[in-house]
Image (cartoon, rainbow over all chains, first blue to last red; front, side, top):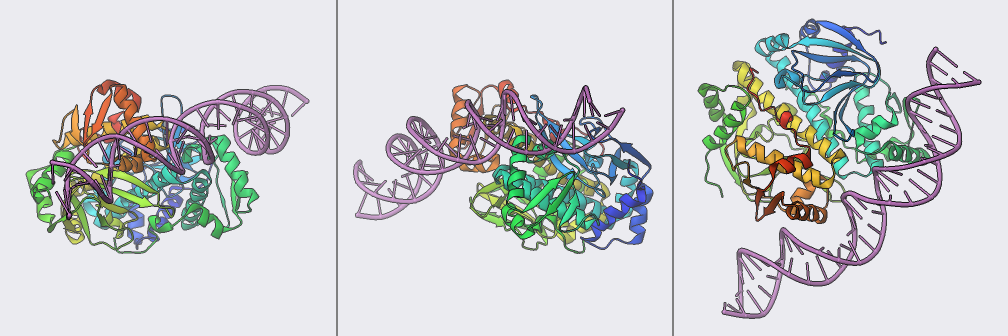
Length: 247
Length: 247
DNA sequence: CGACTATTTGACGCCAGTCAACACCGGTGG
DNA sequence: CCACCGGTGTTGACTGGCGTCAAATAGTCG
């Protein structure tokens, strides 16, 4: 299990937000104080099940988690991939119950933030509230790009795009670099995230490897030709809104 | 062009929100006062182009609009369909520039709300702010369901699902009923919304017609067998969060 | 070493895409 | 009133990208 603390999770969140606007030390402190409890989940576990009323939101402190839904025939669709510093179900503060599941891809450590504390933040810290709001609309932007990927991009392109996005998001919280980063997903997870089958994901990964663009082995992505990967993915990071603006 | 007023748009928004929580007359008034200007756009026009910095948000007063992105090869993906009462780019308040385009499907009338006024709302009306926040996370929930549709549902199922969702959303704002509602989209629009081609959309519509589930002609949907349509779509409206809760 | 899970590869099938022709419909102008 | 026209919808024949099925290989943990 990870050995990070709530402070590490909040730090990752702050890094992510600071790429978009200034966050004061006081605001970071408010966030840290909002974390009530820390929990661990093993890889593969479902951390939150859809439909259950919730009164806390979940900050991912360490590990990789996903939001997903299942269909009756057992097919699964991953709707967003989350990394440390992501407030996985902050939207649950408004929704009161989730419409999807949240699963641990790798071993995960999470911090629980009671909605009562979030409510107090909305009443007392307007700017911080807006930044939390921002983080939910950023998630939505990422999900919209996923709609484009799955709806219109080819299989190779979808995988390339997913890799570009995750590489960039991980860099923002100080994990990995432009050429190499950890990705603890199975090929079947990638399939569920891209709307493909694991067999076809495997074929596309081979293609990307054969064409010397990138390698994905043993939970690590190595990018050999970022330029070409970006071109194949039609990756345009605008939707990640990496710009410091007063928000 | 439509002949509705800003008040009609705000009323639709209030109806939509009141299906999820109580909204006071005072709060509705604040919303109405936030609308600065009303504009019309003809069907097919692009109302907001991605990338341009924005300082107002757009309330759809009348008509049908979509968020969409294009790929280099000219393919288009519609990411969400909007109806009267939808705050089409409320998230632009936080994002400062949009990462997608907003287009008018039918003739549209919109109300412009300056971000300065939204900011004041976040500082003075916490509950209303949370409801606006809610409406952005509701959009995100709808977009997540779209990811599931496009990623894992069959072609017929995607179209059936889209129809079920729109029927329900329109009912909430008092348009149409459970058996019949207006849908001013072309088959090619449906294709762009479902990640299919217009030819295949046509075939699936024929199938739904032949099996006496629903008809879509001349901009109107008539549902003949709601039960069966829901089953084909695997439509579960939980994700629309139609429950009054203190938020 | 053995059991299990994940990855890899090949052969084959099908759902949806492509291409193309034709029908329909409302609008416009002679 | 009809000829024409552009946009949209409809249909058929054919193609192809990705899915399915299945078996072999590699990696992991006891």
